Image (cartoon, rainbow, N blue to C red; front, side):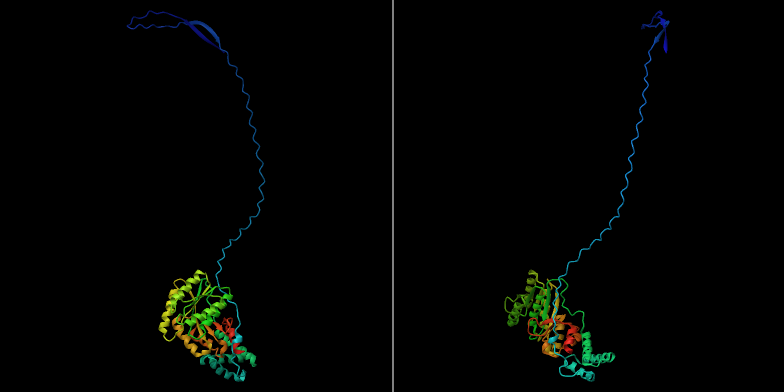
Length: 377
């Protein structure tokens, strides 16, 4: 394409007179047309940009087969710590008990004589009468006629009457050391019982400490020292003659705790002449001990040969000592085993231990069934 321009001639006009002269320039227009050819730029057509190839889509991966999730294992609860329980070995004692029927024939025709036998054996009048009534009723119901049948029925009646759930020593709380106060009048076998009990506990693997707090009798300390040595127990004895019993008991507690002993047995004085003094002394021992330990048992030792006198002692000590159990000694030396029945029925105190001989092993837990069989057979 061409563009045309016109060229004009310059014309000079007279300059007007003014204060300020301004030269005016007039551009002449040239009338000739000059053709100017302006070359057009060559436009190179752009090559079409290749369209980007679509990226190949990744093939979907096959989903992994879902395996069944294992069921979560149940969370095991932590097992409670094992309580340090003292389990005493079993011993038989029935052979040491004298039979009720060493002097009479026991048959259906002589059942009325049974009441007299039971009274003589310290069962007491009321208990003897009640037992005979039950034996007659059961014998009639079962059609029992032989001596063996009647004795089996009698043994069942006595055993059922003496059965208790609290007949074992309190040795399962786990509160160590297990503290046992042993009380009883002088001469009933209290020191011997402590020695036998210490040996019995040692057989169960227990470490035993004995505190000789019967400080009013020098002979009592020497005697219990002999039994402690035989039982393999540690003895805490008074430092001075006549030392305060409560202070000896406290030293016993300290020694038991320091040596991590399982059981502490505290011997106490056995004076019943003045119950007020005895009550005050036992109360002081209890208060001193319970500052650092728990009293598991208060065992009253009774001589089975004393019969109803033993019953009177049991009543007196039960008033002042908070007795939890009876240790019945010399059961082999009498046919008056019915005292066990009287104590449990009248005082509601369980007989827990029995002694049936002089040897250190002649000692066992009381078992109502074994006791009844020993009395009858």
